[in-house]
Length: 107
Image (cartoon, helix red, strand yellow):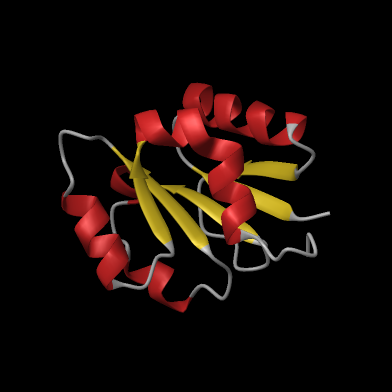
């Protein structure tokens, strides 16, 4: 089973993401920092602040940001983040986005 780590300081929104992914059959942890041992990181880009650590993460990263401030998206994509989407799309398409980024074997 793939292990997903949600990196956010917003526990309410993070719990919403966590529950949706658990319902979809993933093992999910909430964290305030990057966990390179994860199979997928779901990262609150503005909350993380310094995005430079994402450049060296060995797993795919799904970043999200506020649609009114796309600056973190541009920075994250420049660092090699696999996908960066607005929060509204993250909630709407979360399980599809996660499954697209994970190994088809389920890691």
